[in-house]
Length: 445
Image (cartoon, rainbow, N blue to C red; front, side):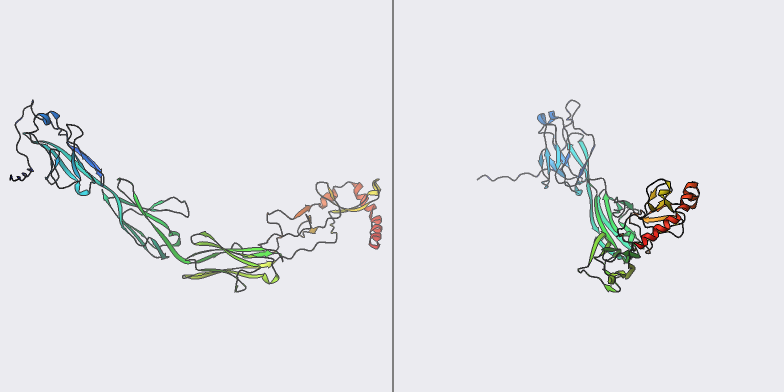
């Protein structure tokens, strides 16, 4: 039986080729090139040889690819290196392109496409392998809670080829909602002597212009004692009406918040309702609704808040507004009220009280005014309905909430009386006796 012969090993360096002249020399494109590829992608290293050589002198001239370690990768179009990621692709007769799939950083370096002419023809291709940034390590945990005046240190370790630059940002969610550049850059960001205003989301961004930048976020919470804010320290309301007390509490952590009345904690009942509304991450509104206020509901209310760092309280007073009694008498002033006997000037007999204003209009005697002791003006209520507006001042202002006055000014001055015609003055004097008699009859009736 004929024994099979073992195949001869393929030489890594081919023997010298035949001498050539200008007419017979195979042409290889020796222009040096640089190929840049991202890790994980496929690199295509070009090599071009005159196709006439491959047809006429294939038995004499050989093409090989050599890696950066000077190890032969292929002979002709056959791979001889034990790396199945590599192959020689020939879309056209002149092409001897080397393909490297799933490129890694270790594949970088100078590759040579050679032909065994004399001298040896060489095509040099520099393979540059780049890698997108990756954050390999960072401060843990990413949610950080520290008390005020502490020091916080954040770090981000990033890799990539070329090495990435690291930039730090603050997201400013409470204010502009746009991120703000902070720090000098680098892997570490240090925040000294922190306050509650430092609480926010911080972000490290690694970028080397390869692919997309990558980032990691840290949420910083600053712990501080409660702060209580009351919009009013005195609040007035009528008996039997409803009212709402509110206070704003800022604290981290939030802890306990509650309303107290005369030292006793308030809870939900048939006539009171306590609600908590979130405003910001560390801010809430504590609301107390009182229905159909009774006399025992008046007094001192305290907004109380505490957490692991302290206790804070603020007090306010809810007081009763006493409705003004409706006046049943007619108030007159020397300057504003005149008695006139209409019969004396040819009209039907009628005696009435008139108030003369600056505009010359007269108002009937049915209006009941309140005199302001600091001015000669007359005031009368616009209506008899009770003002239901909540009062938050010292009880002296009974005006409505929209700021408009509850009173209408009916103005006469002594100068107005002096400017009246002599006829009016005579009428005043002439009617005194008749009016006195009229009032006497009215009182008897």
